[in-house]
Amino acid sequence: MNVLDAVTRFAKEHYELHLMDVASGRARAVRSPFTSYYADPFVLADGDATWVFFEEFHYPSSRGYIAAARTDGELALHSPARVLDLACHASFPFVFRDGGALFMLPETSHGRCVDLYACVEMPGRWRRAARLLEGVDCADSVLHRRHGLWYLITSESDERTSPNRWLAIYSSGSLTSGRWTPHPVNRERRYADRPHGCGRNAGALVDTGEHLLRPMQASTAYYGQAMRVMQVVELSESRFEEIPFEGEHLYCAVAKAGSTHHVSEAAGIVAWDTRTRAGYFGRPRRSGAPAAQSTGGPQP
Image: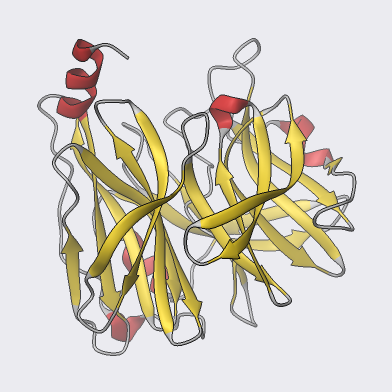
């Protein structure tokens, strides 16, 4: 990455991270270092502590790193630090628990693989537990367990056949040792007719007990412009169907906050990011924090 490229990206692209206490509705924006931006936040409850894992994109090196910080009632990030530095650009640190173990599934599309990492010691010691997919360009992957199967839901690309990404799903009976079987929906290449990352996950799937929701990027003019909440009405080995969610939920309120790109919630804290630079002269629409009382969000 030369200096001109780094300066060009600095001038055109930036994201701002926000935190909100769901109970009180109090929110604040989190300032990132001048040479970086924070994006793709995932909130994690770990005992008495609440952590935020996120991408720190470093302009001078044109690379993303996985960082983490504790947060508290003041909605500050305490001592943010890089916790996973891989050989390629990394982002979207999807963190989740399976039993007593903590895992992370970061995006490493530049490395053409999907790797699962297990936590050795919080927050900064991780080991690779399994390579789930290899030789594929997958972005913003999440895992969801349903009816005894693990589903890997991602956004796949192949520059030889399409300039855009499409929805792709793989399933396995085992998280770390099974074979991941391509889903029939992969052949449909849903969302491949839409540019700007439309269809990519904008956070983890949320099971409210009544609905299974998928926050999804839904930009029309530039990447990171908007997100919307989809309702997954069928997820099985043979079928996948989703429709726009028309109910009330915390994520729906966040999606209306203005140029929302990603959202996550746990332990009564919701985190989201918004794009604040869109080209040399474009400035995305800005608005206030979502109204917490209209959410109906999932329980931590």
